[in-house]
Length: 321
View 1: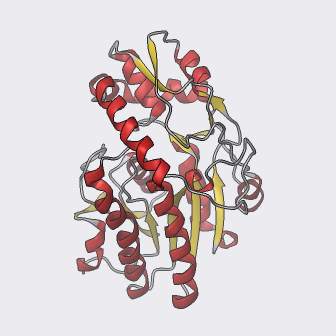
View 2: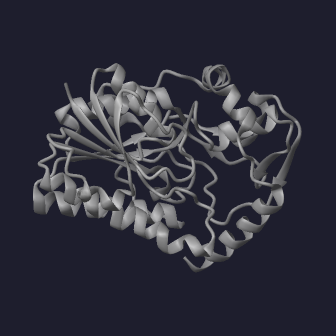
């Protein structure tokens, strides 16, 4: 029985991954500070530690961990000025403490949730793992730094790792764009689109992501490697709106440095991990509505006036960064 420790295990990805790993008969422990976007605050079949990830080394009861999956991070792209210090504190210092935990406890493998945003603007090309990285906002920059830290730490401390660059992950329990659009429709509110909606994104269903992480855990070929995890296809925001069949929308100001087209080259993951995504968007939308309808009906939607204000703040900052 594998012993897995998830940081940020009560968020969208962590909660779904916990359910998946328990079905695989793993023994799962979770560290989470129960800040925003925590969709599951209890897991009857997992051991839960309520604390900030930067305090992970205060826990003495977690022993003989086989694999640590580091999901915990401040992930909002649009952040207020007062949150900047906490942002880097959580994503950089927090990562350092988790790496120290892995060394002290002789963890066999460390899996890091990175992001497609580290690539920046790739001029509409499918991105390969060896592309030059050019992060354009705070979240992407902390992931960029995190990857560098892990590689260096691995050399110094002989830590085995895998870095997984997530593209746009969607599914039940999420509050990202797909679920937000569905919630806006269910609640009869105006759907908010940043820019003209022609931006294309690579959407991967959470179930496909969990299967990829599982393969990463169990195959030595993944050791000390980086993988893109996406669908390998792109879908425009306008086409997503059409699939949801909702015409009550408004186009807000575009975010500066918003990438026009994001699409993963997943050849490496297919070849080495023997993995490929199976769930298309139409099926993914059906699964969300079947499983997550009640939550979406109550999901808190940010007022349009507040969205406009935060976008303006972000655009001013991005010019400096």
